[in-house]
Length: 356
Ligand code: PMP
Image (cartoon, rainbow, N blue to C red):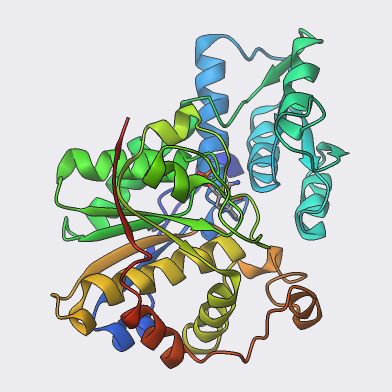
């Protein structure tokens, strides 16, 4: 690779896959992460940002001199900041309070205007989503990206991320695992992989307090018990990008497991993962145990997404004081104990058949 680019936006995508050697060895499977943290904005959301903006320019909705506005947990804001500046647009970002300071600071350092709003349920008009929408409705100079309903988001993953994964595994992929926020990543990639081979198993993973698992298993967005310190994932409503997904299995895993896995791969694989990535890798481990040799199955090639790095989660996932306030002890369970727990637990992986 010997790239020369005219601006940072041109460097979005085309990310490598890396094997997580430690967990692969423990499970007898090949577990890979797609290094989306290597995008210039440091997350998987750069891809959605670029596709949404370029599609809007192409369709004439976003014209020179207009301002992009978006509601986001942070990473889409950072991605949009890079795309906006690269292509010559201003950006205003609406974020709920309580996300890590690291993301708020990055958005401001990139020169976007940040509006922090209270974290309220979606039904409240002050929700970050409605705030961004209303700003755009009230000002013809604003263009609202709308990452939840704007299908350019999942299109980025159907057109690029999915094919990259298929090619990087030489079409030899057994399981794809992903969290969902808007569902763009899961939607686009699972739809592409299934279009190539319906035998590829797709697994959606959900944090505590989210409604995706119950929606997939029972048709209703009922929140699972507890809450999660993960950010940007989990959702309580069905949105267009999620609807693109083709999902065979769903699992809900607790923050305590995320902490065990994050610290294990941090120590063994030089990967300091962000919290949603750590949940992805935890679910990849869970899938390796359920489908692979430890449970009498064949060796599986499993791919998941490293959505961002731990730099954006230092104040939560890697902060023992914060974890203690959530009753999480980083020394509570070893990786071997977690694997034993997953071996004994065949019920958590729910067979679903989501294909809207
Ligand atoms: N991980 C992180 C860190 C994110 O910020 C997001 C998006 N908010 C996701 C995962 C989920 O990605 P998607 O919106 O494509 O479902």
